[in-house]
Image (cartoon, rainbow, N blue to C red; front, side):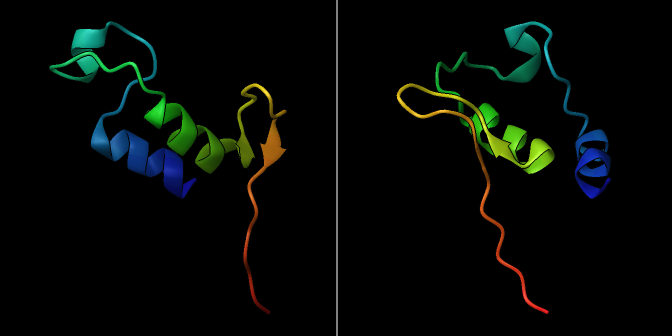
Length: 60
């Protein structure tokens, strides 16, 4: 819920045209590798690795 609130507060929009996201089109998948694991808890599939969970460190 905190991630979704931060996305709404920042005005981020998934999809749409490239000009809506940045002044310069970027080919890297930084947003995919940052936002997807934060929201779903899984890293996306990328050859040769399958999708895998994000390790979480926690204490009692």
